[in-house]
Each structure stands twice: as structure tokens, then as C-alpha cells.
Image 1 (cartoon, one colour):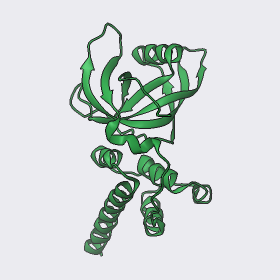
Image 2 (tube, rainbow, N blue to C red; image 1 turned 180 degrees about the vertical axis):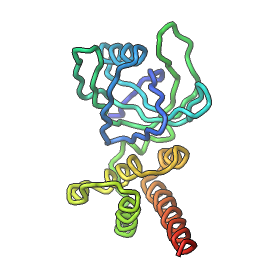
Image 3 (tube, one colour; image 1 turned 45 degrees about the horizontal axis):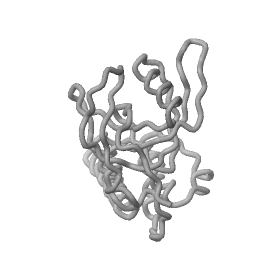
Image 4 (cartoon, rainbow, N blue to C red; image 1 turned 60 degrees about the vertical axis):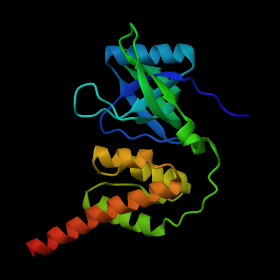
Length: 206
């Protein structure tokens, strides 16, 4: 049975946050407009969209990820701690005018229908993982690689994409990669670029 998602969703724009299906995103909500968004979502269907905001004003990117609030806790100071579980990516069609504090958009999920299908493509990720270890170490980022190795291929690639120290534009490129193979290839190219740049810089200093 095909899963249906709403054609209009509340969206939380956040700069620098990339979020994929089958991953979890903990959020600390304290702004009034987003507290309203989360409370409305909990009362309705627990669904909300996450999308990267651009540097200019109210602009957002055109692709984000729909998540379901899988856990929430209300603090004594009024803030909320929530956990979002990624379901599927979406394309933004247009913003809907409303009288709420937060923004709502009409969206389409068709382009990313493979997010809801079992992954049947086999991808060789050993080389990518080795380079990712070097890249993370050079940037002083600690990752529990022993636990990381227990993840499946999709989770590994999505996790690296989410936490890698790269630009917002590069993160968005990964989010918009249709297939897992495309995403792994794009991530590999980005990591290679940074590693070669570091090598080059090291050579010029020596």
C-alpha cells in the first residue's frame, strides 16, 4: 500500500542543517513560532518539514525532508526537546499564505519516491569510508567509528553527509542527489576536493 503524505506541510527553515530519510534529528525548540508549529503538528499528524534557509532573508532551498515527531519533551522553561525521524524528501512548489506564526508550503514527493522503497543497489563504500576518516580527523571531528560500522550503507552515507564539515551548498547537493549511488559519488567528490586542497596547502607551506 502506497503511503500518502500531505500536500501542504509546516516547514522549519534552518541554516546548515541537512536531514535525510531514515535518520534522526534532535531539535531544541524555543522560538515562539516554532513552538506553535510543533504543538500544532503534534495535535494533527506529527509531520513537519525541515529545509535549509539561504543567507538572504526569507529564502529557502527548493528541497527538504519530511519528518515525523517520534518523541517530545516539554521543559519547565517552555522550550521543547523533540526528535524527528526522517520519512521522505520533498520539492517545494509554493508558499501558502496563512495567519500563523510559522510558514507552510505546498510540496511534492514524486521526485524522491525511491526514499520509500527498499534499497536494492549495492554500493562499494570502503574507499569513501577510509577517506572520510582522514577528512574527519584533519578537521578534529570525533566519530565513534566502531558504532558507525554497525549502520547499514544508507545510514552510513546519510550520517556522513549530515555531519561532514562542508558548506551549506555542498550539503544541499547531497540532499538533492536522487539515488544512493549519486549521493555516495557526490560525497566522495566533495571529500576528495577537501583532502586534495589540504595536501596542496601542506605542500606549499613545506
